[in-house]
Amino acid sequence: MSHDPIAVSYGRGHLSVSLPPDAVATLVRKQPLPKLADPAGALQAAFSKPIAALPLAELAKGRKSACILICDITRPVPNGLFLRPMIETMMAAGIPLQQISILVATGLHRPNLGDELAELIGDPWVLEHVRIENHYARDEAAHVDLGHTPTRHTPVKLDRLFVEADLRIATGLVEPHFMAGWSGGRKVIAPGVAHHETIRTFHSARFMEDPLAVQCNLVGNPLHEEQLQIVRMLGEVYALNTVLDEDRDLVCITFGEIIASHQAAVDFVSEATNIRFDRKFSTVVTSSAGYPLDKTYYQTIKGMVTPLDILKPGGTLIIASECSEGFGSAEFREAQAKLVELGPERFLATLTAKSLAEIDEWQTEMQLKPMRLGKVALYSTGLAGDDRRLTGVTMVDDIEAAIAESMALSGDRDVAIIPEGPYVVPRFAP
Image 1 (cartoon, rainbow, N blue to C red):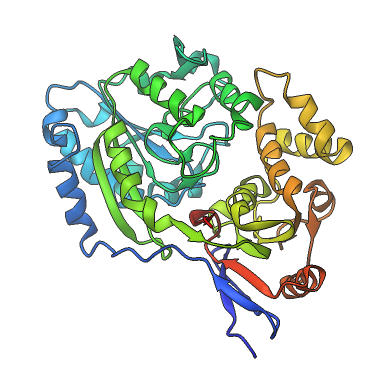
Image 2: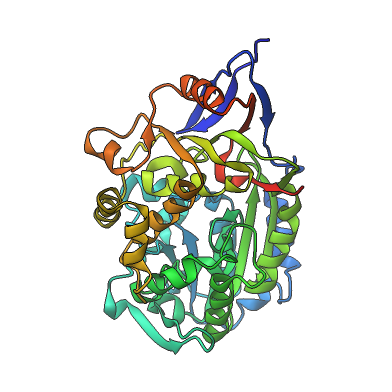
């Protein structure tokens, strides 16, 4: 029996994947959520009826300055929808425009500049009239030291521009995150605008190897608990959270006190994102969610970790990621070279003694999870030369042949396909 080709997210478009005739396909998609018919109206409603907070117009009254955090280019947040209305509401309440700033929460990623910044902001008026800065985690002078978290003693240093603002608002996207449970809300602050020591503590083995530091879990998740403690140390903070569907259209927007408004967005999307299966698969085909998440191999590892719950031990995980920008940082390349040289066990042994992870080494540590479970095969048109070797996984030039090979190897005709990659979380629930 022939199958219709399946469109898998890849770069700015899709990859058409045809399955072998004898394959039995299971499509793994989020449950459909109703699109917001009037996003601008929904935004104003969120501002005027916030969660556990006063309306934005009242919050802004009497404030001398404001700082708005936005995610960097790796997250498709609809900044063009909300930045100008948010800023205009602040101005109408009396905050001078020159005292309002936007800070790009880069974490340890590179800054977003030029055309990329224009794409990220999504509004020429904002780009022209508002002070916009990138966060630089390695700039010592740019951070305020708030001490250490009470429970796990994480050093807390945050970007001065945000800490010293009179009104502080984080904005972001709520989607599954393979360690912190969910992105958005408190995560935009730490690691978003945190000092490299704070970030590298989060990324050390004692957090990364914790069985509760997984996608869609906030209960007992050590990263989430530390992030909440950091928010409480910082004091009064608000957040605007967005949820998008598979078409990148807005389905939910919340505004209010940062912890409560984030939880409301998580509650909204959680059920639709966690898809339960009573069986596992020997062949799982997934993506890195397309642009902008699949710009680098570094980000691709998220797509490898998220579907592991439904991969049979010894099975094959096939992932498509364009990697249009190549590999990732020099530090990540170094970590991958060490993995390829030492092998998974010896590489992990070098990590467990460290209280601070090397920059970007933690992503290589996450790659150990799929490698422990089965075989990883990567289809990418953006990686060339030595980059392909340094992935440490099997590179394939033909996804359909890789699927057929996996089916033949396992003797299992069932194939799970996750077109949207890590934005969907399949769960094994027998």
